Image (tube, rainbow, N blue to C red; front, top):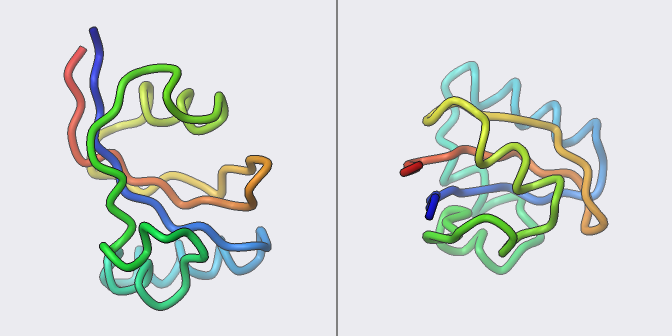
Length: 93
């Protein structure tokens, strides 16, 4: 069964999410941005969600995590919780 490890940053607005993505693409550290801005408890660990399989996260999240290129920041991804930046750190198919 497929498994992935990912980290994310959760914020309330698409604008803030896009700004953080721009900052990260310009060289800001994803983990530090998660610690400073993410409203998810995982922010304290740099946004690290650990390892999980398909169906363990909300569908919008799953679609990105199990299709996106590894080590590339994806988003904004809208879910019922807000807007996410996602980075798949590893995946096995």
